[in-house]
Amino acid sequence: MKLYNTLTRQLDEVVPLNPPTVAVYTCGPTVYDYLHIGNWFNYVRMDTLIRALKISGLEPNWVMNITDVGHLVSDADDGEDKLEKGARREGKTAWEVAEFYTADFLKCMDLLNITMPTQITKATEHIEEQIALIKTLEEKGYTYVIDDGVYYDTSKFEGYASFARLDLDEQQAGARVSFNDQKRTISDFALWKFSPAGQQRDMEWDSPWGKGFPGWHIECSAMSMKYLGSTLDIHTGGIDHIPIHHTNEIAQSEAATGQRFANLWLHSNHVTVNGEKISKSLGNGIRLQQIMEKGFSVDTVRLNVLESHYRSQSKFSWESLEAAQNRLRDLEAWADLRWQSDADNGDSLRQDITAALLHDLNTPEALAILSQATVTAPSADTLAFLDEVFGLHLSTRSDITDAQKQLIAQRQAARNSQDWAASDTTRGQLAEQGIAVRDTPQGPIWSRI
Ligand SMILES: [Zn+2]
Image 1: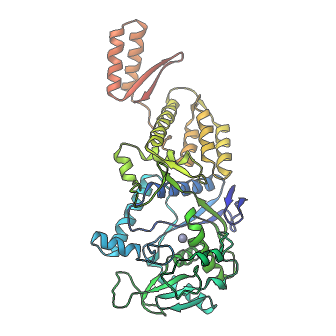
Image 2 (image 1 turned 120 degrees about the horizontal axis):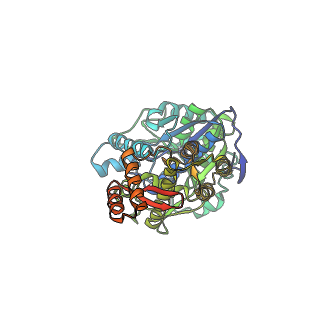
Image 3 (image 1 turned 45 degrees about the horizontal axis):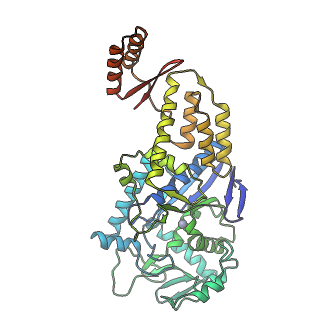
């Protein structure tokens, strides 16, 4: 299987260190608010990666974190903790906010038929591991302490700029008067932040450096290495993680272990809504719940995501969702043909779709192959395979009842004897039960309305 590797900027073969297990880590959500459609594109894509790894014969050990502390409003360690901000907005504690939105996230994962990771790890449940990692970095001389926390000295880590191809000189020169002029370099980042003097945070812990909370980046290094070892096979996340979050994860992890942190980095591109970037101020962060309230099924959302390649900048719109809904209806009508005519075994279909997915998760290509195959009825095995890779519930659709089959036969008999009134009556009865009948040279074909 080949994937585009952000580390090498080319398509690389997936070569796990301990096959058939493949160790995959995904940066999960910060649970201070509902997720929006852009987030869900990302997680459906990560699910597709896991499904594709499975059909390639590998066994994913998939770890995803939940950021429930330490992610500040600005990724550059400035401003308020997002969880504390959410708590103030809702008149709850940060713990309650985290619990509420974590539960909502998991519920939506399930609704969207996204594979559950082997482990879901919360930052607040791994404070000890994070402190231990910071201590290691301190012993190795990578840290310094200033008024508001313990920082990572990025100038000590050779190659800090290489992953994201950063121009650090330009960054430094272009820096506005910083919030924090005690930082040695603009790219230095917090490993541990101190609780503000005279202020009680909902979430704070004792540490060798003082009471406080971990910086955002350290959790991913600490938890991924705890569960998957010091070198991950695949690390994934959103494209916006590349210049700061993932760059910092690499700096922390590799400085601590002296080994490469991840062999392959996969990044999901941005999603725009009606041509604009998703942002709070534009109010275009559409939630899954809002989509479902408009009558769209979660399978429609999945299909809509799969229609674009994970590396392309995708456009979400209500029109594209409607188009996906029509396409899904066609696929469902095709799946129902399994009950009505001789099935094709679908061997070449499976091979071609597998080849498209194992070539950098080319889901648009895989769907195009599927569309071309819908001229012959599918077998149960073919539908089961399609559900494994796309998760669209095509294999679990049931046959119509014997009584409904009898109505179709009655209608056919009425038509044969040119009794149009009786034919119309049975057609109406079937329509009331959500069944449409179409006449073809091979006989009547039903579909669900
Ligand atoms: Zn992360």
